[in-house]
Image (cartoon, each protein chain N blue to C red):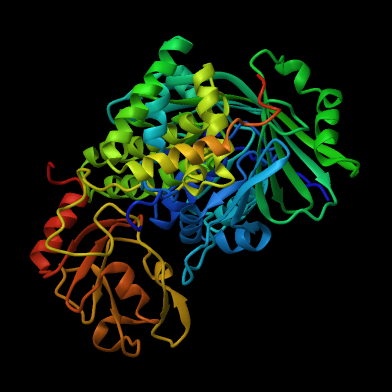
Length: 75
Length: 540
């Protein structure tokens, strides 16, 4: 992994499902507004943890380029 | 060509004429778990009576997906070759979201193992092969069809069971009763025991269809497919041109309506297009991830679905049951012949509850992923799926079932400390297979040599072992049986590498092919102490 580059390979080892389950559980019982705010806090916290602005900005651009999920996304 | 069910006749047991004898083990339920247990006990020389209220093998494919570890257990029992030959071996899975393939995976099984990662084989074939195998032990296995378990009286040293047959009722005394009678266990009901855990509202419609189609031997899973809007679907190929299709139903769906052929037919047609097909079997399954709080209740022990139940994704139901048997049979045998104290059976609880909890956790998470409950959960799932096509990390977060891997018993009471060993297999892990050359000069497999009782697996040269304990030595040079020691030859150094086996080191292997202990510098004393512990003689 070269420095300053977003790594999109899986980096959570055997704990991917634990992290996913913890994320879902954290939103349990929250309103949509509360959930959105929780996500915002998390993103800011994780961006700080990454500590490399170049990587964070690349991730922002990449996530933005993938969404929205497409015309069938209504539910 | 559909499976032809053979009917097994009722044979009048001596018990109906007052000539019954007390048996060491009574097994209730002749499904894969009960049959496997009878065979495993017979291999340890233990007699059992197996009663089942039916007179044939299972209707419908039911448990179809058998994992490598389960095949290794079935190999020990003597049925794996038939299973692998008949079954569909697969290793590729494809995951679709709406109308697009999102990604595929190849299990990439490591070379140098006898058995594949998974095969698909209908449960009725597995039961047929197990019944054939059980017939090899006429002195040890008494298989009684049309014999319904209806009641029991428990005592400190055993159970009296009541059996109902077409020719009347009889009582049967047994030292141990093992309930292998499935999710609607009569034994569990009579003991007034209930499951703890989670039941989901969603159901799955499960069908076997017969169809000529050139689909590859792969696992195909869809989230929100065009042919089954908003739900999930799974397609698995089985032998005999039978395909297994699982379709998720919404919580509002009425199972009695959904299971009608006229309801099922259009759902399947939407999926397979204009290919002609015939419906072979239909079932509706409620998602449950639950278990008994304890599997051992005095002299009554629960195994398989009578003890725990999981959602049908990840191959954890049938495989979990066979792994229960693997754990229980040698322990019952050791207690029955007085080599181990009765508390060894309590470690079945400890060890298999760990396995059941692992299966329940994984299966509950897969089920949650398939059935998002809140709008945020749905958003997370949609975005994980949306990213999966281009972002490799997201593929690992998408959960359509985590495929069953063997459970490690590391750190539990029968296993000893690691005595300075590095690499290889920590105590509690099941042995890993590898190719070898046996003393006759034939290519063979390591696991085929690890059978029967406790065994010391040594590397480089034989080590001192306690009297009466078998030893197998893996050497780099030619295999031989000179001087009373069996030496097998490593092939490409694979056994030494997989076990971290440096010359002079040794493993103590349990009868269920799990590592009890290992030693960088083994002595007969250390091996003997680890064996006492593995037999439950020493408190942890």
